Length: 408
Image (cartoon, rainbow, N blue to C red; front, side):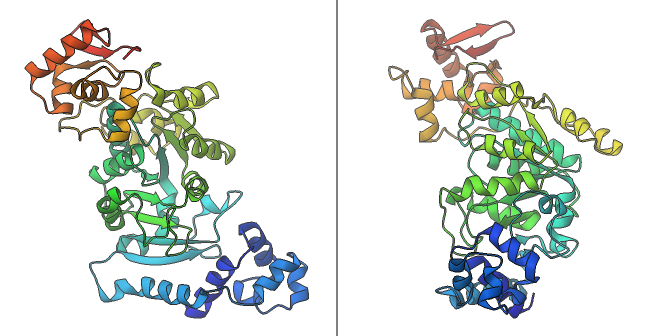
């Protein structure tokens, strides 16, 4: 993109009071942004309000600084072959995803950072041809997180690109699963649509994950460089996650979860909505159950998703990973916000018992799986499980499995 063209698009985006809808009216009336800024005040007022027309007649504050920073950001990979490629994709570009263009509110432009071979072979438009969104709770159960990772891995190996939002919890697990898949590098493993500028990774805990995505997939944002993590931007970016994808799979979500916004947008766009059911006692399952009552498709395996999307037969014939995995590696310790959920109403239990309840989740689980999740030895686990069983928080099931009770 030439500097003059870039300047016009950025200026249109940065003009105070001119949102996406007004900008699209101007583009429809006058053509490219360069032509918009060549119009008289009267001509502009035929499309937008007088206040907006006046704002368009002069450069926004600090605009030149934004232009220079964006130009430097775009040019940086040219001097460093180890960096991912960068580009800006506008509404009129052939690389703009058709699936997103068909939505009610497509972004005017998208900042994209990703693997060089991907951006050189069709870019985001090519990547979006076979995309599935995977979203869910920022505070998932251990089983929900494992499900997200294994579903993403299997679906990626079947040929889908996994789209999510780089948030903690289910989003991060879905990205990780896609990156771990044994799949062709000629297509994007995963696409992360973020609610900040691409020069700002949020949350910081996902900095290393974002870098891996940039080298094997793509990072995407509609927000200019320097945009910090603002609460209002995250629900708005959900329309892009849904719009890029053939369908949206909700892995685990509370009733008030932002993931349900993504599912609603997908449904409104005529895309498929899938949900994984969970325990009736887990708050993180209630959003999925609500979606199922509203007509979302119940999913028990990756195969269910592939068949519903009518994927090519060769994809369906590939062996898929189990949708209810038993993780082999020790799971990371519960974060403080997760412990707060576990502790609600159970303040009398020890920290060790809280951690064990969190690892157990609400689904039946065997001793070996708990050893893998907690990193504790079997003897310690049996002592703690016995105490929780005596206190009425855990039930022992046939086959040597344990399940957390609603009171726990």
